[in-house]
Length: 279
Length: 335
Image (cartoon, rainbow over the protein chains, first blue to last red):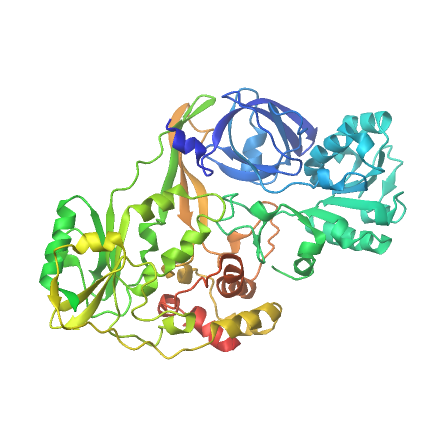
């Protein structure tokens, strides 16, 4: 095909599904690679537009390690028609990719600081690339604390990896669930309840937050109550997106195109919008 | 001194453009009671008077209602992309209203602020725009409220100004416009005249200050209660540019070998589904807030971000609105 189409940001490139990994009953990871063998550098917190041909295209955060640029992973819940179709894809199938898109987490800018990551449900997926980066250069950061809330013990994502990291690195991980079932002996309740007791120095801390919008609003309030500065809080926003390049209008939130100006925003930058209804 | 062209000479010229294989679009009587911009098959389809503003805008000749981005072919588990559409043929827009042409420099900013939309840019480069200055306005017109006028030249390559007796003064404004009329006009001591603009209905700068401070004002709900959310205002607007991207044709699951295409289609922030997430959550779930979004974007966000009001005062939203709202109706209520 003509090369100008490949360069066009609205044209997705056909990639190959390498494998599909089950993460929870409704959550899965697709590991994909370029059919052309291209390397795919991205920054933690960026997303791709993934296209299931004949069904549609959706924005999905990259959940893999930014140091690995050949195999790219996306972790998603099966919710709408496109993610339902994605779940039926398997090794050898084709998926369209446009990206990487948007602004990610400020990993370099926060060197030397304590880092508290707060994840709600599938919100852990866009934070995982940040965790890989922090761990890779562990000595450059102070305390690293992950606070993670999810629905039930069966919904805990990347469980083995989290256990491995907790054992291998100087990393605090606290998990809470909405519903305790089976042999769960950990925290029960929303993730914001973990913030008050979590071991970090508020004035030294940068917070990276991702989850449902309501969870993020209360998390930011709670972090503020602990004394974390608003300009030290970052959050990843979600909006309906179609173009991914700041023209189609769908993801607009006040003056921002979430796809291009975000999805990661500094809290001080968008605080005035978060409190308002129906922006 | 001015340069003049008669209606008859203008039609002959349109015929020459068509003979050269150019696409020529202009106002045409598409139904007994409806003048719309449309691609002309013959020069006599061009309508030059007897209407205030066509029912649509010229944006569709740059940003079509439906546009094929690329095709794809599903063969088993593999998908091959097919060639992108060929560049568009040269086109001339004739007798566009100045308020329609003025929308293009405004849209250029959006389609090039970060990524460049080459589909749009290609058509812009291949098009010459000849405007027709207005000789009358109606109660929906408000160009003067947004800094324009019945003979505003923004976005025009040449302008025809009515001079009476079936003659138009030709004002060449760019090289492209000059080339189009080279040797086709007669010198004259006479001049064409546009009508006076409609009286200003609001002050766009005061309005921006109001909008800055009144995001959560109750006026949004009060003024827009009657809005049906039909989105007609966006479709007839020269500056509204929201779009959706959808698949058309083949579904991966349905066949062993089949073809489909990615289509870019007009969309509007007035539709409930516009912001709806797959989860069902809708960050902008009611119509008053969708109206606020539209007004805020046009008169506050876009000017702050791109340095231009996203409105040319054409009045099409008011003319087409089934409940007589349109942006001017809301703006007058705000002031």
